[in-house]
Amino acid sequence: QVQLVESGGGLVQPGESLKLSCVASGITLRNWPMGWYRRAPGKEREWVATVNSRGGPANYGDSVQGRFTISRDNTFDLLYLQMNNLKPEDTATYYCHTLVSNRDYWGQGTQVTVSS
View 1 (cartoon, rainbow, N blue to C red):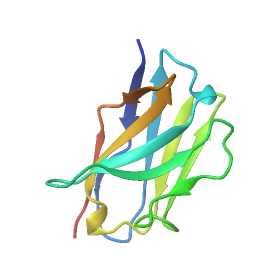
View 2 (view 1 turned 90 degrees about the vertical axis):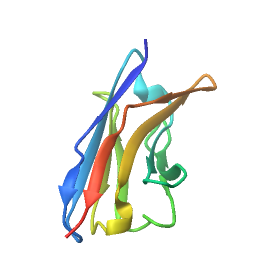
View 3 (view 1 turned 180 degrees about the vertical axis):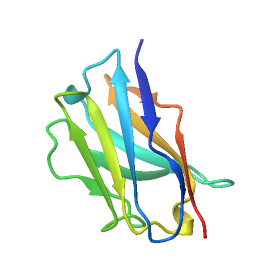
View 4 (view 1 turned 45 degrees about the vertical axis):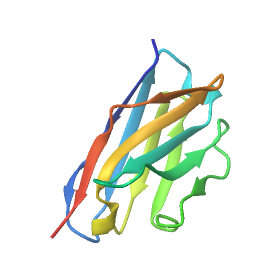
């Protein structure tokens, strides 16, 4: 049974930082590309960032480029999202995702709220 569990969300003020984590069970994360998505209230799910299985160059959505950094620790099957200079429009539920043998796996999400 594959499970992805996110953590690290919270309430922060604009300009502050948060680091999200995702831990997997039931699969070896290091073998698969990983990503972060988010969904804000009333909006469609938005792709945030992706990193390949070897931890090579990552890709980012335009709205987070230069502020967010995705990384992975293949030793412990962990995925991270460092979020700096957070803005109110970053408020959303953030989801960890992987695609294994053409099947999507999602975590339950962690809430990030940016508000003064």
